Length: 293
Image (cartoon, rainbow, N blue to C red; front, side):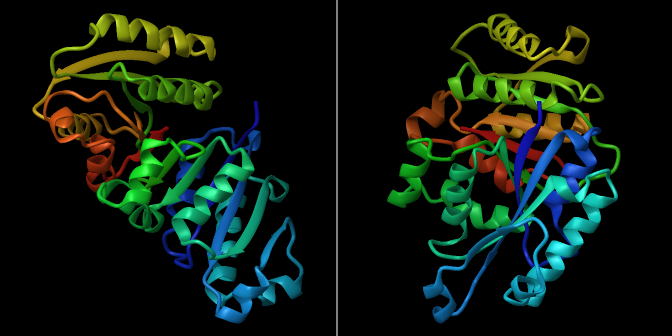
């Protein structure tokens, strides 16, 4: 089944990590559609005009309305995609005027477009961190608590050559099993990637075997055979630390987690909703982080 991804791009043509990750991760990009989203910060007069345009082949008039950096970023993104078998009719470019702040604008577009994932480069990641790192902020806290993120968020650093496979973290929470479903759906036709089901043993909760069995059944429903599934568990002082260690050791291309994990011990005491996810966003390197609401 064709997937549709929203990829955010900035003016920095040297990075474009979201686009580069898509090219490095998939082996059959012809099955997918990308919408490249660039959010322009315009002056007050232009903002009043509420410029919001979508086009497949922008004409010269529309191009002239974009800042030079935006035009270059869109052109560079198309060039990168053209080199990995992504034909131009599979790429939609969209520019919007910043209206409610870039984070809210990205989430708004994600909700309207029914995307399978929102792919963020490292620059977008920094803008997103406030959602997780400021639990005292009522709006941000409500966004996380109410699961307002419309689709899984893929946060992508610069792809490192040779990385492959997905580390899928499960802890018994419903969010983690939504991550299982998401990974199974995305990787159903990507048979060059294996999936490692990873559980950090911190005491309490369901038995690991029961969790692994449930996760494997979900992956099988997406047509992923047992030969592509690996089980792994470890003990760790912190969940985030154990995940980071395993990600580095295994050379994974992506780490998938539930945005709201199962709360245990100190996490429950401090009421840190999404605490593990927040730490991973801040500290993970080399692998992309898939956060599933």
